[in-house]
Length: 372
Image 1 (spheres, rainbow, N blue to C red):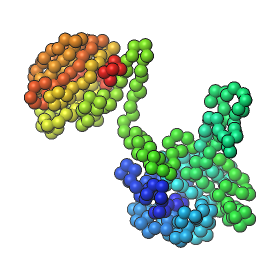
Image 2 (image 1 turned 135 degrees about the horizontal axis):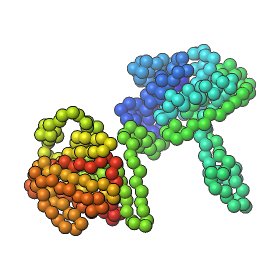
Image 3 (image 1 turned 90 degrees about the horizontal axis):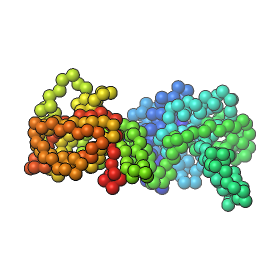
Image 4 (image 1 turned 90 degrees about the vertical axis):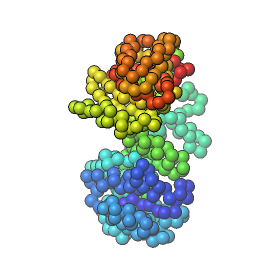
C-alpha cells in the first residue's frame, strides 16, 4: 500500500511533481511492481487524480475517506482504514517520498519479515557520528576523548520508507494501546537501508537533491578527478565533462564503431552553426572524435603524461599553442603532439572549424589548477 495525498504543503503537490520524466509516486510504484513478493499493490489516496496514475501503472486504487488525508490524520488511522477495507495477512507500506528505494530493498525487507516471522518491521538508516537526544549524549561521553567515527556505536534512525505489519497484531495493538505504528506487542525487527534509498523528500531542498541524484544515476558514470598539492595540478579523464567544460555541450558519444561512416554526412547532419562533437571510434586502443567549434572557441591548456595524440583538420583553421609557441593550421593539415607537451587549441577565422582528434578514451588531461 502506497499512501499519497494531494494536499502536501511543504512541497506543493510533490507526489505528482515530475522527477525525471515521471511523477514522483511512479518511482516507488515501479519498484513495487518489480518485487517478487508483493501480490497486490494499492495506491491509497483521497484524490481520484491518483486513480488515473494507478490505472496507467496497472495497480489498484483505494479511495480513502477525506478525513484520513488531513494534516491531523495519523499513519495508524489510515493504515487501519485500509486494512479493514482491504483484508490481508501482511501489509507492506511504501512511501512515494523515497524515490530511490529499489525492488531489491523491498524484497530484502519482506524476506526478513517472513523468515523471522516478525509482526512489525521498520526500515532504518545507520548514522555513525556523535548523537544527542534532549541535549544529552547517546553514543559518546563528553568528558572522554572521542573515538574515530568508525568506532562509534551507530545510531539507528527511522527511514520510514518501508514499514511492515502483521495486520492481526496491528489491529490488536491499536485496540489495546491506541497505537500500532511502532509495534506494541508482538515480535519487532529493523531493516537497514543505505545510500540513496534513505533519501526522503520532506522539503523543497530534498526534492532538488533528488533531482541531482536522479540525473547522476541516469547518466554515464564519471571518472574521479584529483588535485595534487605538490604539483598544483588537476587530472581529468572524463571526456564528456572535458568537452562540456570546453564549451562543447552537444556531444554524441555512444554511436561509435560503425563499420562504415561518411564524415561529410555527419557534418551535414550536425551543422555548422554551433559547436558539437561526434565519437567515431572508441576501442581499447583508440578513440577518434570529430570536434566542431566556432571561431574563438577551443580547449584549455593541458598535457597528457602517458599518451601521444594527433589531429586531422577537416575544415576551417585552428591556432595551436604548443609550449607557448603559436602555430596556425588549416584544412588538410595533420598535427602530432608528444606526451607531456602543453597545448591549447582555438578555432580561428570566420567560420566553424572541425578537427578529428585521435587518442584514447581514458587518457588523463592534466591542467594547472589556474587553467582548469
